[in-house]
Image 1 (cartoon, each protein chain N blue to C red):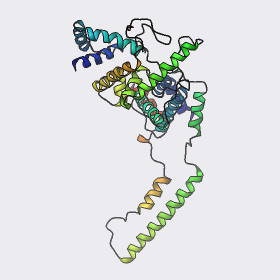
Image 2 (image 1 turned 90 degrees about the horizontal axis):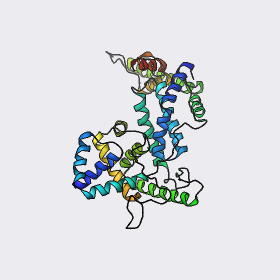
Image 3 (image 1 turned 120 degrees about the vertical axis):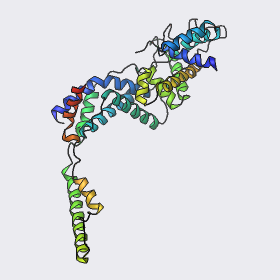
Length: 192
Length: 150
């Protein structure tokens, strides 16, 4: 590897590595696969640079390749990971077995709910919800019109909400204290 | 159907993705629709449970080294071992082409334009010759040019 081109490439990795990995992790929901997909993304960038075909805008190009690489990996997987495997849930009290069990159950329901979405809705939702991208960036990355992306995202949210709503009794409302594993007073939009 | 549209707007509001006009229309609807106001709370409760997923987006230990190894493992120039078959193919294709041209000339057919080598020659030649770099500049120079433009 020539020292000059290596330094420029490493600068690109340093600048975009985290955001690429976040996109890959969001789609794959698996840290190891996300790291692999991120690596593959930068390998493709390196190949393109060696061919003398540097992208116009590295950020947008890297996001697009990260998404397509991640989707390819996802399609090649036999099935989504079960709770407790690579994609670990987030228990509120790691030492509490009930919290762990509730967290796993929620994770399974989330995965099942995601599986019920179309690939387009799922990709849009995950890129916004977990990928750190605004819907305008999602639209640019996927090459779709913003109104289309907004509609897909909103419909995905409504479908997921129906699957994730707490299975409380008929007298319990959304304002009641939930069981373990549920986030309180948390606006899902407060994620960036 | 109209409630469905406003419920979609509620989902977008949850993620702060509403434009000002959309937000105003939604507020006007909510002022007069208890069902949608209740749904807004249910939506927040439901989606608030959605797992964030893997928290780590930092590059794991050893990731950069593994990437360097993968890139370093790719040959930067055609390997000598692969050149010989390409050169042999080129040479044999060229010889075949020359024989064909000699045969044409022997038959006395006039050729206003030089005979085009057979496809096999062109293919072998393309394999033996690396493709020219765009604008004759290497990747580093192109990167530097892009940086200056930014």
